[in-house]
Length: 242
Image 1 (cartoon, helix red, strand yellow):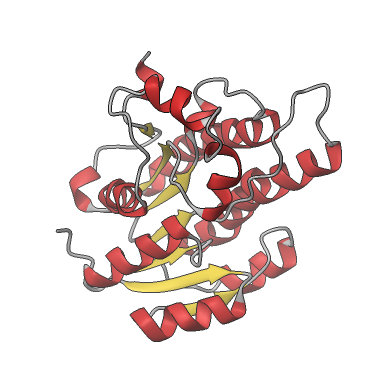
Image 2 (image 1 turned 90 degrees about the horizontal axis):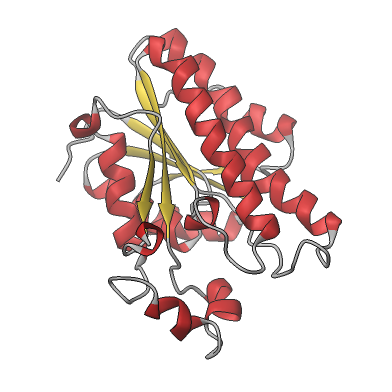
């Protein structure tokens, strides 16, 4: 169990499964948590449950992001806000959907880093940023042209940010989870012709849980990972080792 007493962490996408699990884990470990997202009612419920501080904003609006995060006195950031988009081939993809996926997943993560990093640098305490990417950035998955492309961009944002922010003792890493069987995931992975063949290729052969993603996120935020930066960490049951 890491000790985050005296530290503050911003978690975007905080009302989603992985985001909420991360908020709960950080609060349990003593952190002051700022829970970001668009779902005002969901943020209020999470705040009532955990004591996290709700910070509503829209990841697609730079003004919103700037106003919400630039003044937060945080030592850590978890970019967990995301959008799945569609299941489509390159030739069939809806470019409007592609643009939305890129805007939320990649551009949104970059905007948060852009507007939170200056304050972290100015405070001089260092810190850590963890971007929630996907196994879809590491291997090609059928139908994932939009989502996989957005997460590949997130991984590059991670590496470049690690390079640029390292001199300020700010570490930047990604986690690349396999499927967590949320309601959103079930719309694709829950189909009998999709899920079982996928799991058959995974050494551990099961879906991940939210807590199994939150744990490595919190590790990368912690002092136990003090020499780890620029890493894209698969949390995928071995799927990408094939």
